[in-house]
Image (cartoon, rainbow, N blue to C red; front, side, top):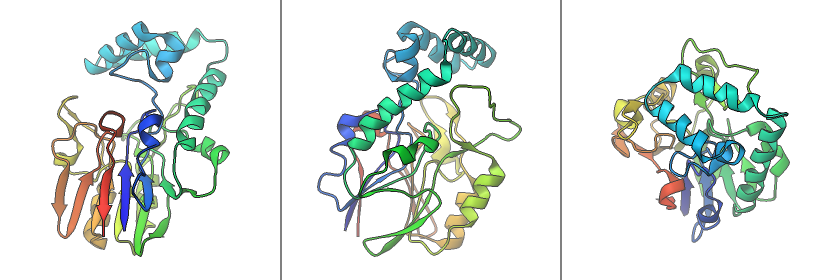
Length: 262
C-alpha cells in the first residue's frame, strides 16, 4: 500500500490535484482554506476582501504580538462590509468548490482550525470521506482521525465574528481523543504536546499541541502519528516509544505529500 498524506493546503488546489498521483489513497489533515496568506498578502480570503495593504498590516501586527491593535484592525475591516458573514461564506465556498473538486477517490479528510466543517456536507462526492472522529480501515491498517485545534485555556470563543475557526475546548478535544482506540495510525491536525513538535522556528513561538494525543500515543502505541499545523517545526519527526510522530509538512508551500508505505 502507498498512501499520500497532506496538511495545511491553504488554497493550493493546483498542487492538491496532483497530491494523490501514484497513491492508493489520499489523506488530508486539514487547513484547506487560505484565510490569511502571510506570504502573498493579496491572496487568501482576507486579501480578496480587504486588499494586500491591509493584510500586510495585519500580518505585521500578528508577527509583533500587538494583539489589541490587530483586533481593532480586524473589527474595522469587517465592520466596513455590508454583510460580513455573507461575504465570508461566499469566499469560503468558492475556495472549497475548487479544493474538493481537486481531490481524487478515495480521499479521507478532516478539518483543521482554518476550516469551516459545517459547510463540508455541501461538497460530498463519491470516494470523498469526511472522517473526523472515526476509525477507518485503509489497506488493512486502522486509521484514527481527529480534526480541529484546541482552544487556548481561558479563551471564550466569540460568536459575533464572521469567521469562526474550528477550535474545540480542551475538554471537548480530550473527549474526542479518548473515544479513539484500536488503531495503527493516528491522524490529527495538531501535533501531540511535545515541544520539539509544537515550536515554530520562524514564528519563534510554540503552537498549541494536545497532551491527550500524547497520552493516546503512549497508550495505543500506533505505528505512526501524523499531523501538520506547525508550518516550520523544530523537528519534523520524533519517536515516542514505537511510534514515529511525523509532521507531514506545509503543503501550500512544499506541494509535496508525505508518502506512507506498508
